[in-house]
Each structure stands twice: as structure tokens, then as C-alpha cells.
Amino acid sequence: AQSVSQHNHHVILSEAASLELGCNYSYGGTVNLFWYVQYPGQHLQLLLKYFSGDPLVKGIKGFEAEFIKSKFSFNLRKPSVQWSDTAEYFCAVRNTGGFKTIFGAGTRLFVKA
Amino acid sequence: DTGVSQNPRHKITKRGQNVTFRCDPISEHNRLYWYRQTLGQGPEFLTYFQNEAQLEKSRLLSDRFSAERPKGSFSTLEIQRTEQGDSAMYLCASSYSGGRETQYFGPGTRLLVL
Image 1 (spheres, rainbow over the protein chains, first blue to last red):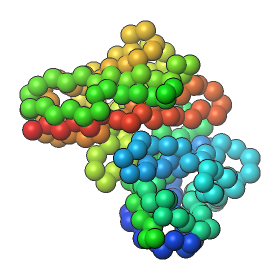
Image 2 (cartoon, chains in turn cyan, red; image 1 turned 30 degrees about the vertical axis):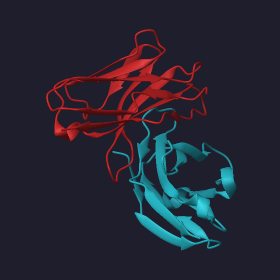
Image 3 (cartoon, chains in turn blue, orange; image 1 turned 60 degrees about the vertical axis):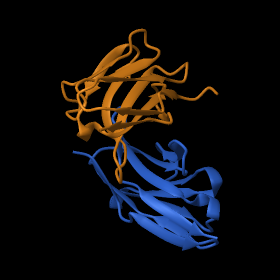
């Protein structure tokens, strides 16, 4: 069965620090990959997505993620975080052509001003 | 606002009561999903509709749960004889089927069963 593992449940950073959130999935076929973000008091929003092509995907608000097929990974990065990036981040995977999306448990990021 | 909407946003009920939640998807979206999210976890898939047809149900969805999408537009999720373990956030998402399908989520309905 598919599963998604997010390595860090909580991350605390100071403003301007670099961010990398780990995500690994288990599935042998081709996949679509997503990162969603949930800001305090708001609903899940799509941050970025990968379907095919360039494995380095750029999303909103300066975030990017790199799909490394050999490592079954889709890590999220941002070179310099801001206080407003404080949120919970969810990695998700869906097999290509399927409908069922599997989410990781989330990483709660707190950015200190 | 043309996003996914859900009502009510919060529901407190006593154990054993029935509750019903509503989801209005983005108007041109033909797929609709229900998820459940508990504290410290990501959303877990419950069920999925393509137009009015319910095509998949998770094993998480016991016989007390039923979902409908009668006209292929809004959907309802009913929980009968609620239990304390049903307390969670119930999320709805919609999408348009296609090669680059992306789900858009509503704000959720937070259920507390006393």
C-alpha cells in the first residue's frame, strides 16, 4: 500500500534561515506529488505539484521541491523563511491516473521573528 | 468566493445522534472527495464521487457513514449514531478529472462528539 513519510513533525527556525522538509513515499509506479500548506485558521492550500518533466518544481511564495525518483523523495525547500511561513506542511502522493491521494502526517513549522 | 465551501464549520453533538455535513464544490469540478483529519495526522481518504457516482469507499467508512452527491453538484456526508471516535475534522475537496488533476480543499467541518 502507498504511504508517505514526513521525517520531522515539528521544525523551529529563525527568520532568514533555510528550510528543507523531508518527504518520502512508497509506491513502485509513476506518481503525482504534492505539497499542501495549512496556515493557522485557514484551509489546506496547494503549494506546488509535480506531474512530469523537470523534477525541480517551483511553487508559490518562493517554495520549491525536488523529485528524486531513485530515492522516492520529494523534499520541500525555501532558501530564506519568513515569519509568515509559520504553518503546517503536508506532502501527498497519488499514483498517476488514480484518484486516491495519500497524505503524510504533516510537519508543523514555526518561524521565530 | 468560488472555492469549495462546507457547512457547518463546527458541530457539537451528543453520542448516538445523527449529523449531516454539506460540501459545495467548485462549480465546474466533476470529482468530489471526502477526507477525515484527526489531530497530528494528515487527511485520510474516505470516499470519492465522479459526478453523481460514488466510485470508491475507504474501509474507514463504516456502515454508520453514508455519502451522497445526488445531482453531481453538492454532496452530503451523514454519520449515524455518532461515537466519540468520530470526533475529527471532515474535509471536502473537489477537482476536475484530467491529466493534471489537482484537488482543492474546503475549510472543513469540525465535529466534536460528547
